[in-house]
Length: 289
Length: 289
Image (cartoon, rainbow over all chains, first blue to last red; front, side, top):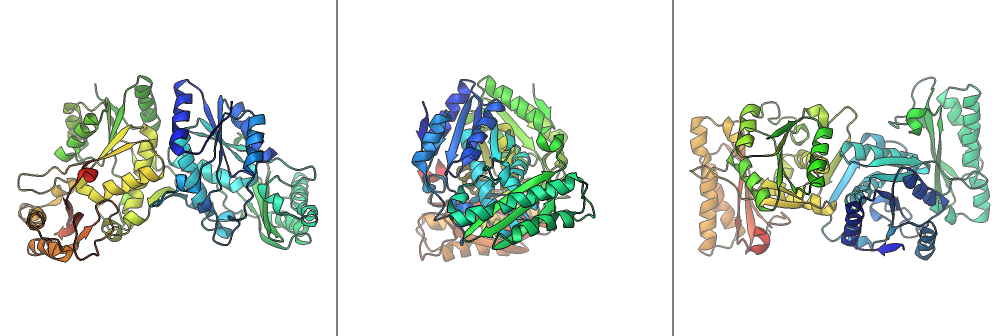
């Protein structure tokens, strides 16, 4: 039976009960509007040994900038719960905003260096909001393991950094991006796209694929690889925030002449919708761990 | 038998073992140079139900400003350990700096509003460093209860705020200030005072006492109460950072004409030494809880 809670203290008690019966809690934090990408995170924590899965649904206001899409972020709670039931999630936590940010709330958690570029530059308050809410959810649920989608590549690395730095005893997993049949990374924000934008949206993945192919064929110049992605996106998207190669762990932008291992990070606008995607070049065991 | 550890992972394992045997861990974070004030914190967590006491000794660099006394902060580890043994502390954690801040460290925890005035204004990075290290120690030890001295009144309230905001399941206790026979609040920094400064130092407590007496006699004007403290300190100290009345919970400075409940906060310099102290006026059950 799925349990649906809205109170932080009830969530804590439920997780305490799981642990007192030696269940291993796996946490899947989401903002709802669930899709197959989210559901794959449930598989990821189970594969890592979680015997109870807690999925949280909370559109976290502190990670949205004042001009961003907080107000119109898709809310599909009924469908979300039915997907969670099918997936045999044990507990869904779907609190009101004031339950996590009551009057007088004033604390944040922030990782500095890894948030400087890319999403951190274009969404200045974003990661501070993410690390704060994730720290809170970690403290409420005490999971052994938590999973995040690699579609939000920098977010995954930021959370990993925060978890390590704050000595939280939680295994952070980055789960591979789940894609639509044409390669578009699944995202709750894809719902914003009209049919024509939806067709054009595939250009991001096509660009990333072209760059991967060039890398496999021997291309090692960051600027050339970036240009391959950029030219694929340029004609289909309305504007590009960034296309950039970075170190896959530190997220420091590649400044060298050639590169053997990197993540290509992309953010671009299609009408009123902002999409992000990425791919890793020269993946190795460290990265896939 | 006292256990002395320097490795964060060994500390975590030791605390996990305590909990697996249903011991209630009480945490006493210190920077060493222990005195009776610190030892009273051990009593405080025991009285609150701790059956295992972990005392940490770590001069935390991130809570010192560039011109502050980090380098010369007193280090008396041998004496500290012998005091902990006498006090039957179960575990002392005394790590090297790099064990808690390894290369690449980049995360901080910060409470904003309650840190704006007083120590937060005069020591801009101080509380960010405090909340960060305390969050780390909380995550490593998983205590039921932790105690802080009310001599550092604002610090106690800041940690309480951070703990509540981040949903940490830890009871935060403020332990009454322990004083020397002439009223000087015990502090590791009292060691900096030469005999003549030590004599002059008692003026802080005398000023606070005079204000308390005036309050008991009916004086309710914040400015008058502040002036009573200020005139006591002025002649003995070299300079005053602040003498101010504030709300005892939010630390918002009193701006009203009269006040029924307040904390008087003082920071002042005596030679190269900076001392702080405080007293609460109109204490009630809420405050003493």
